[in-house]
Amino acid sequence: MEEKKNRKTIRLDRYLAEMQVGSRSQVKNLIRQRQVTVNGQTVLRPETQVLAGSDCITVRGQQICYVQTEYYMMNKPAGVVSATKDTREKTVLDLLKDAKRNDLFPVGRLDKDTVGLLLITNDGELAHRLLSPGRHVDKVYEAAIKGRVTGQDVDAFAAGVDIGDDKPCLPANLTILESGEISRVRIKIREGRYHQIKRMFQAVEKEVLFLKRLSMGNLKLDETLKEGEARPLTPEETERLKAL
Image 1: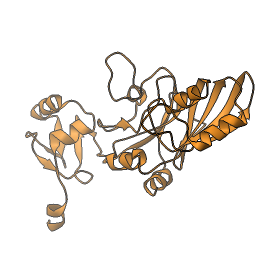
Image 2: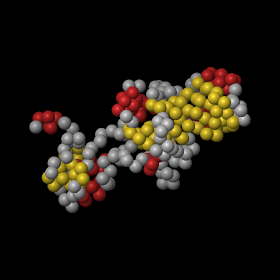
Image 3: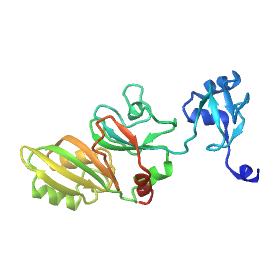
Image 4: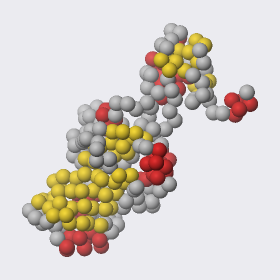
């Protein structure tokens, strides 16, 4: 009994809303309609306090397990926006079908036409650490570039490209995979400025035709994921990210 008293509790209606059973008003109606039980007992008060992860909650006979945090890796496709809601565009959360929580968000943004690794979670502390300007978490991309990329461009990226902001970009590592009328390159940056890679190439008079993010910190894109697919992070991936 003492252990239960010391553990954190949560309102029943909030518990069910966070687990996407419905909106708070819909959940309250379910409770009042005697559709919800806690540890086998029908509960009629939405404000009833329950122990998340301990008490057994059911809705219409189906057990609703509580999940505190979720972590998903998505291979973002082109044509969707990195946002939680958008009245005009499809968002990355619209593609995430198996999530349990209703408070997930993408960590950082990929442009609408950029594909590749996107982390989706509700862990705000982790997101802050990954995106904080002072942390300088590495991000690696592959790109197709209109124009011949040369060693001169490699040197310019290494020195820090001026893209018109208050400060030039931090030094970036540019690797030429193939140089020609359409060049293939790999870029490692340590910032996340608005349209940064596109603006960096514009600064050296070239155009990004295709951009794909391969990694963020020690999290690498699972190449078995098709564009638009997502999967939960493994416990090992999650722990490595938290250890950054």
